[in-house]
Length: 368
Ligand code: Q9C
Ligand code: ZN
Image (spheres, rainbow, N blue to C red):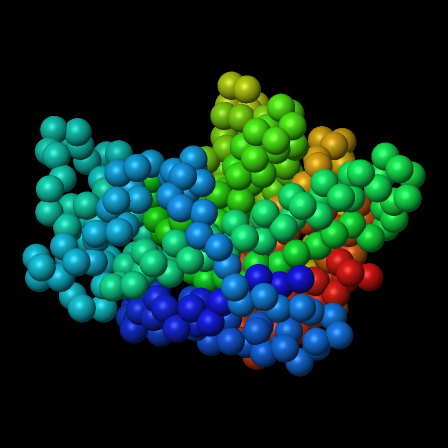
């Protein structure tokens, strides 16, 4: 079952971004969603698409993002334009680098706040960016609610002994903008609200409310880039387990080391596996299977959240692995074998021509 909305195509369309120092087309484009959507529509025997979604309000977003950050996102563009910012949208010019003597000047203008709440130049905030990011989170929450319902049913069947462990329920949220680079109070990397984090925290909160016992969630981040946002949000807790396979020496450049293992209660519950540039299908799948076998399965999760980026693809315009379309069904199959209800959430992937087959490949591999 697929959760999406036409609004993920029509909203949040910056005209350009600054990429590697140059003015570039905005890679995180509406065509990405259209391409994936088209593929799913062409395979109605496999994919059932729901375009309706509920509004869960601000509360589930506030569980993982700071109140002042949410308010900033909501008002940033209006203030930016009022103060003479470029109509393309908000892009910071100064970021409070730790080597600056920061802390004594309180940011007041939209230009200062642009840097205060953003860590790079790719997360352009336009007129409808906040609403688009809000919708993406709400669509993801709608899918998450269904995941919990299916998961409860799945668990009940397991107790009854009527379970088919080889076919755990699977759902997919086809959303944009993506989320895994968004930290508790920073946007960046095309991300504003961290959909995977909002979903994960909602599962934990909701299950605790309903049964007095929080369900355990494992996040599997298979986007080409390290999910610095999801990592930061959950760095000090042992539920969820955050795991990521990503490219070393790549964006976001300053996070994603295997030495980042979590802190306090969370120590040991953050697992990064950086892979070399030019990683091939077999190398990727072997590492994924090992991560699943040695870290995800032993954690005994009740739910899996997959941050599904397909920018691992060999022809991705902003990435650098050698992964082919053959690898995606194998990823889905490896995830299915965990035997746990899973929600796939769309993150990156910028090779428009192959987005459908690659995302569809993961989902079909999962369905078996
Ligand atoms: N030289 C996601 O995939 N610019 N975000 C990269 C590379 C930003 C990627 C520059 C990449 C953001 C969700
Ligand atoms: Zn990415």
